[in-house]
Image (tube, rainbow, N blue to C red; front, side):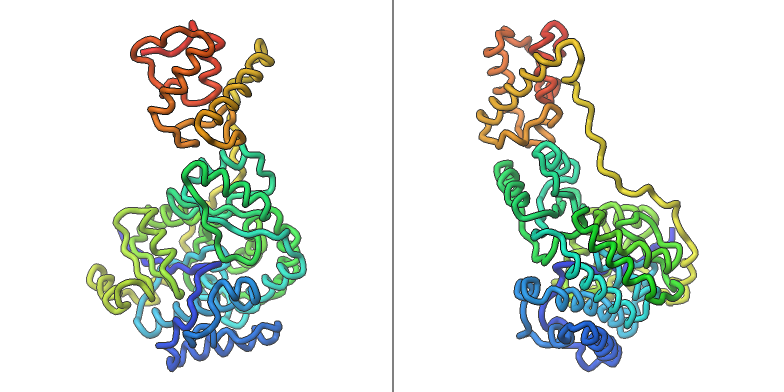
Amino acid sequence: MHKEIVGVFPGQGSYAPGRLAEFADEPAVREILEITDAVGAAHGIDPVSSLLLYPDAPGIDVLAQNAPERLMLAIFAAGTTGHAILSTIHGVSFDVFLGHSFGEIAALTAAGAFTVENGARVLCLRSEALRSSPPPPGGLVAVPLPADRVEHLLLGGGFHRLEIAAVNAPRQSVVSGPDDELERFARITAALGAPVSRLPSPYIFHNRLCEPAARAFAESIASVATQPLTARVFSSVENGFYPDSETARAALPGHLTRPVRYLDAVRHLNAHGADTFVECGTGNILTALACRAVADVSTVAMFGESPLASQLEKIRTAAPARTSESAASGTARTVNPAPSVQPPAKQKDISSSPETDLDRDRLIAELCSAYADHLGYPEEVFTSDADLEADLGVDSLKRTELLRWTADKYRLGTLPEGTRTGDYPTVAAIAELILRPGEAQNV
């Protein structure tokens, strides 16, 4: 199987002042930064070249709070210049481009869909849409839990405005939403032993609360010129390759409201031959996440722990460099588009059998309250279908204690030897044990 090199482009949060200082004299870098600064000036944004060329430039927290448009344009410029450094100076030939969040704009620019000028313009218009039609005050938090468990916590906790913004790794999800609900969510995850980390983001992203901004963005970029793709671009939001530049441009506004599925994208590309992921930008976040997503992949980060030259040498040793023509020859290859990400359907609650609805509902509420008190968990995380182990992290010893307490309280007698806690994974299953003890599952 032909092995492929994927260029990955980060979005929000991937910035470090002065990281491109050593490349300040490279003509390709100077040209890109000059173009980006000129476009930014036309949109009232201070130059970003100084942020990337001078180590004493403001840090990410200061920019996120005081100059978010400048920060996002700097991240775009860093990704675009990173690609130029890797391809023109070091001769890296990319087969596929993959962007994370608004990093997809830089990925499309690298793939020829936009000129550098128009890519920067798209990014500025995105910032203007967010400024003119802002979502409520809020942001993003990273939580060290699988996406399905986070989804359960959001549903069970009554978080109506929080949404999963990104699924980055098997045990790393990002949640977006207003500050009040993020604070309550943080208290719950802390109680579960999974404290969140606030990300330096000036806005809520990848959330339906961004719909007004998405509409404004769509209107503003409708006339931005595109060019034919010269390389393939896989969208981590659309979950497939873009067939053409116009489709990609039309999709970008919707990304403000939909989640990034970086984990799925990395796994899909790896399953179809991608074995090397190269980060174009000032950090190594995406390559680190790729290693967590798939075993035995090679990664290169321009500013990783090892010198860039030694990282690139490993690639050349493993697979001889390919020409840009051989990479471009695959532009017509596409995959069948995957369905759009839909909110997961709520699992059927087995507590809703008609013959004992009231008794069962009352019993489940009583059990949820008692278990929350016994474990020291917030009561709102308990729902009838919450898996005590997988969703709430209750170990087998504590689940055994809960079963014994339940048997005593509801006079079930001594549970038969060999009864397994795994036979009763949810509060609803334990309620069935109480309501129908004769049908209890024993071994």
